[in-house]
Length: 334
Image (tube, rainbow, N blue to C red; front, side, top):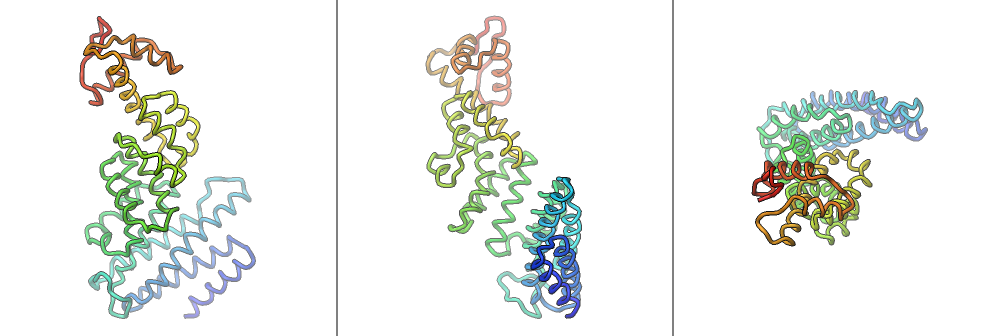
């Protein structure tokens, strides 16, 4: 075990010296040694150690990249994280291709299946792929894991994390039904004391539900300090397009970093619908003049002409947010 202990002690020494780059170098040698030991060992008794090494390799690579980027002024250098991906992919292959059948809740032993370690490594790889913005590689993990039912045989924490990342992947692929199902599962089964993790899930679940017209309660937003969604929710609920637009613009950078800005931009159509619904209730007629709707925009401080009103209504009718038809000649919504 000298090939494992030497880099382990080297990594420990580099951490004490606060040398992040050298810490990652030693950690990468340690990870390679553990991968080799795992391949030549029987059973799955090394899996807990492998999980710790995978997590530390991920963290050490990310911290080393941040340190080097600060030194060089380059924000996009992810060289160490990219090499760490290769190490974790090797761990993934060694655990997934084990010939011993996986038995759920089986204790670690010299007869157990190495497949028990797959889901944790997959979650680490998901995190790294999202950080590197290489989401296409996530597909390479989904099919092997789900075809073998491994995504349903891990610990609850592993399954919740898996559903969280798959939900994010669904969201970026515009599969909002699947995204909502995965985020709902992750939130429901997340540990009650893991408030930070619940907030991370809600950062993506709330936008998906907003797009589907399901608005969060003020109590929920207050409980998890999701203040950035308050003006969006209020604007959609009342049809106040000005409040919605101001809230979206104020937190634009935050939503862009999360990757939810374009999704929330689509919610504007629901805001339009609710505004027009309020106009309909005020007018109380089946035929609504477009100038009434234009007047409502003017009251909100967002004046637009009748052609723009007609264009917005045509889109709402096409997307089945409202039912009716437009009379272009008479400038009437029926």
